Length: 228
Picture 1: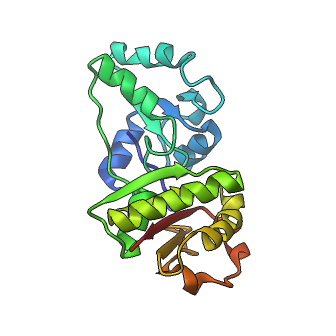
Picture 2 (picture 1 turned 120 degrees about the vertical axis):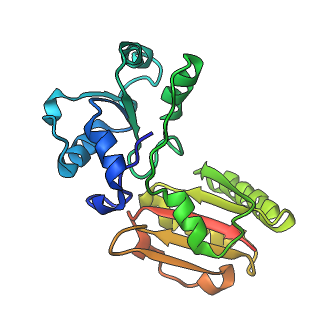
């Protein structure tokens, strides 16, 4: 399980051990091939990029062809799993490769790297002992409203921090609906552009976010957290 930077080009977040393992690997299961090739090239992978073997989960049916590609494990090959950004296996389809490895009794080795979800949580000031990641919320207003109210109930009753994401071009949509759906005193953290020069992380009551110009977050990768 191979991490890559959250912010493209910030390769300094990876330690030398992780880089060494990546450099020794020639087979990869990835969320998006173009991003992975660009990252491996910038990292300085010693093998020419066109000679690496890359299976893209986003283009292919997640199952069709994946098991055939993973059969290289039986030949003694290491296979790396890459997400689009940060650590793989969370909010991406990389877990399909991991499940196969467990079923076939192959070792699964997680390498150290940045996770936007955990970095947002530890920077939020919200409860880090009881939390849940909810992925992407519904994109229809009525369903989104119900989901936000359900998450608020979990946050308040169980003191469980609720974490979720949205496609960067819909950040304003999710935040506008947070203002309409969530209680004024509930805490909302916006963690934007994590690990980049434009990083912005702020936690305050929902009522204190009222009137904020949400367009400043347009097309910027963001993690949202609510809690008490």
